[in-house]
Length: 268
Length: 314
Image 1: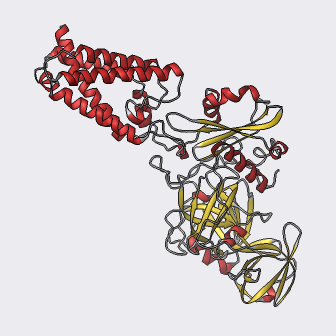
Image 2: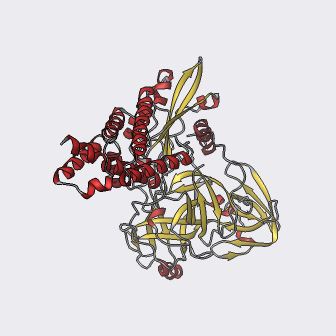
Image 3: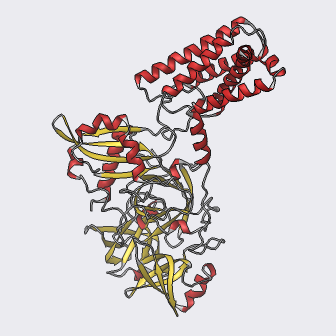
């Protein structure tokens, strides 16, 4: 049984690598903010996808030891990178499955990469190719591969993203987004934590929306000066951005609270 | 209430504080916009028009030899009587010489709320309230060419003239061969797919009571201080807010400029007609411009619409 478990890791890892390659090539991020800089240049993503594709095909067609070693090194590196992102609390996604992996890297991502690394180590000494293993697959082999696939999906945050993306097909520019959703996104963001202590009012002085961003303005006091902090909260996408800016001009102070509510829908 | 320009500048500054996206000041079309002038006629002679602008200032406008005057149709200088409202489009040569003058022109767009004989009550939306139109017998046939069902619940869009304190409906504002839909049955909204931030469609005009400059846009955010109507647009337009800016170009004249959003165009999106001023517009009404904004882009008020390209975003 142990031997069978080690053997099925070869086609399983080959399949995972080919899937990762395909999603990197096909699935782009759904960033509502076109001005935002992507975490990785497209050329880098293409190089990684090429490496994954090559490694995945090699696992399926050749039993060479160098391929198995490269497999172990690949997943060990991935585990290290994701663990580092998680430790630093970065909001950057791992990009493991292209545009589906936009959620901030977390423990589930580390656990997944570590399990795949263990699988790569276990399959290192298997003398058969992935295709040969699949060609002689028994019922137990199928059960083992299915179980591994289910486990992989269970710990993958990308599954929820894919389901949500399928379900929610309305572009962010057209989505009617309630204020409660915007405030929830805002108050869980790093930008909010950075300025929260400086705000002098719990209520925003102005809230308006343009396309995929909702702007929320609060009066604040920074360096003993009355200022306004404006947050731009993305209203769509899988990884809503929150950006902040500070306006130090006193012209805005004079107009505090006058810009929005009286404008809104005043009948003739 | 802050003057619209103050709110526009304030939100532009706040937006730039986040995105550092200084918008270019240049005009958005191939040709510069004209400078339409609106006001009450103080005095007029065959060669000079004196207007009192909404801000109280007086403007002297020479009338070019080729000037055309509209007052319930083509009219002569006798229509330029003191006390009447006029909107003037200057010549393309620069300066203020009047090329087109519309006297007491108005427009009523909305849903018919009631009708009795030659009087039609129109619900013009939450911003513009209820308006009564008196339709002379000779104009009724013309209007029914485009609005055959003058019954409660139907959409109507009529250009008329203010006369003796009432609005006389004269002609349908739409020349589209496609009749407007019933108000209760708007065209279905598209719920998926990519959204272009360059909108191509129809721009119409409306009669702002204070002669403001700007546009009414159908898809304003109904939450917060966005100023939206809350009913959502019938056609898929990206959400904006009051004081958002649009780069608007008249596709028929090539004139373009930046125009602020100053009102929710609550009813515009219910119309599914097309403008046929210079080819058929690719979609229905995406903007209602105030009279001066419409004239600045080279529009003819008595024609009702032009094809437009509006770029949103920054």
